[in-house]
Image (cartoon, rainbow, N blue to C red; front, side, top):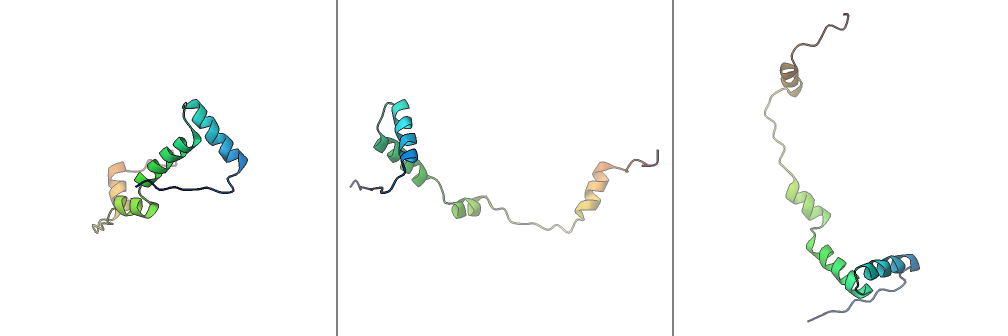
Length: 80
């Protein structure tokens, strides 16, 4: 069953931007807003997104600096 939303006190600048977008798309302001709300509803919240992309921290016991030094090799002599 369709639901109705009503927005009050929408500033003129915001409405003008929506109207311009609607005109470029050859549609109406309500249709633009409806599409944006659909897009927003499909996106995960910030917390949901962070939970999904968070990786567990793994400590291997390896000294990272020593490992990088091994990969880089010896430092050049700065006195040359």
